[in-house]
Image 1 (cartoon, rainbow, N blue to C red):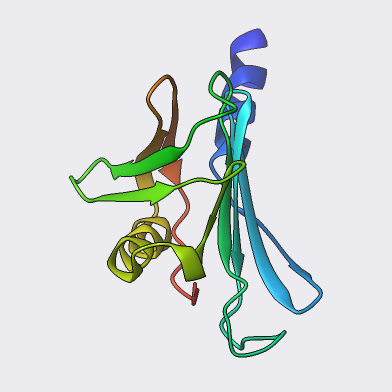
Image 2 (image 1 turned 120 degrees about the vertical axis):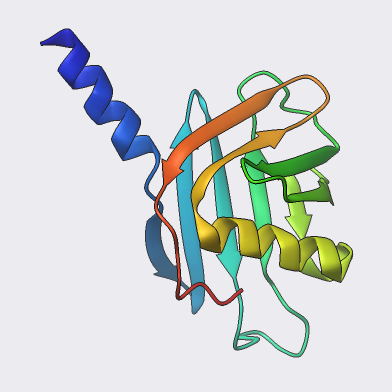
Length: 131
């Protein structure tokens, strides 16, 4: 019985929770004591500048200044963090697009910092993600 409960928890950790907050689409994923939240602003709700961001809380590296999203198929996106947050307006556009593509595709990927890694397997794809 214990194995079944643990398996269910792992499955739940690999699906994005989606909601809308003040006109911004928000996607949240948690695993292994860490979490990632992708906030999308495709319609520029609050003006001409995007409010999209990726917020990453690592289990063991709360003060990371860079996170790399690595897919199991070899793609990667490196995003600088300021207080656990990478804002679309402040990062390299090519890196932002690559991160969105990795998230959109789903599958297995990991958020990696200099001192920690948060691995996610069998993540549900988000084919309609526009961020």
